[in-house]
Length: 341
Image 1 (tube, one colour):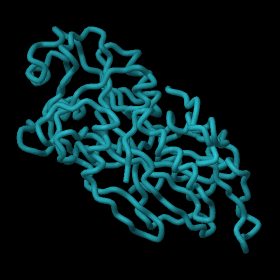
Image 2 (cartoon, one colour):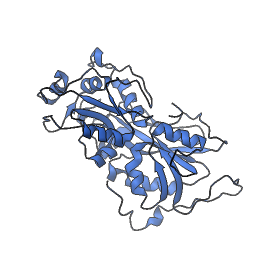
Image 3 (cartoon, one colour):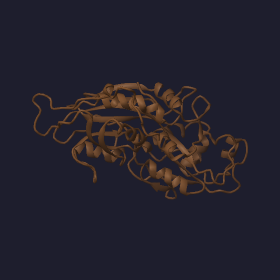
């Protein structure tokens, strides 16, 4: 892993105390460690996929969060250096790409990683100029070709075959991709590296652009920062399609394509279909206090949304985030996220 790898919540049940937590100094802590008020959890940075979730949680917890991408958030966390504009101290981070377990916090502080919620990386698109019959369908051959840069027009025969007819006479495809170090890129590229090398995918559509929080995209693609930036660019460009997490897509009111999964079903993204994908994964505990979910690159369940992954919450092990994590998991499905074990 690369190291530098709305619904607004209006009510959190009748008793906020269920989610309240006390974060204080433990016996013997050094002066550099942090004492925080009951529902104050400090400052964090990282993945934009949890932007909607964290915005909702601000009704019950006091914190700041800079959605500057998984890579930048992890850099801040491990160096204990807040990104520009974020108050000190850094106490947590979020990444869609789990850490390897070899990373060290400057000063030797211990840390915990837990899967927080399931995220679906959607292929959201601009409807202007398209005639889409009951929802745009994209087979693996089609979306592999689009994201590899080999399918360049919405009138391509592969897209037409997916949808039972031609959906545009002549409309160039404009692909919007993340320009920053992004966990969404990691989830997407991991999936493409698996499915875009399988039988039925034409040679021109085979994925050979790598896996990571950044990859080598075609120069013609439009770069944008953050999931919100991608969504805005899609809205602003006729013929645009791009990858953005489901919660952000819902906030921006963009449609998403139905994707063909491993079981041969066209699946719409939803909390249920993301959760079905997560259930196909394998929970792995490693390092000292680290957990991740493996085997998510091509979930096998018939109801699984194919481009799904977990987002990971990291915090220093001398702090208590149990209440915050519990609240986040409870809210997740109402905002477009899936559930994790």
